[in-house]
Length: 151
Image 1 (cartoon, helix red, strand yellow):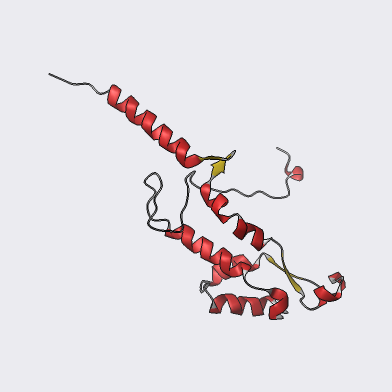
Image 2 (image 1 turned 135 degrees about the horizontal axis):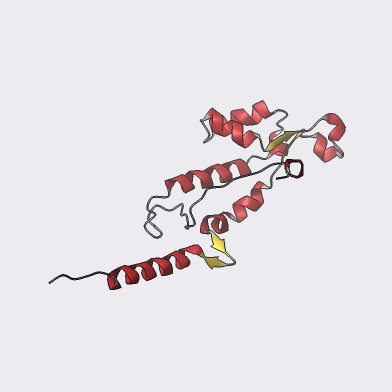
């Protein structure tokens, strides 16, 4: 191993199934996707926070907006706020930036625009749902053909 070559590591553990924000839809027996619905609500809500128009100067002010909105959990708010950068006056380049000393580190609108794709878990533009359904059918055929009948 070469630890000097690694700046960081992110490990994601997510099931290769499609998630829906609409509880009436299910995928491969996954059932209630209310967890994804919450994720989608959080992302959409945070993306609607206009730092410049709101005139927010500190993370504490944005934290209050999140707390009064849909993020009551302080740990979850703290996690979201790790994506908010507090600019120092010397980092501000233009007059437009001087109105807000805060900036999101990630492109929330881009994430919102791709939520369906993120939830879809598509690999090379092929839905994992269809792949899993095909595998399930193959497994069922194997198990039914290998059953023994005793007389």
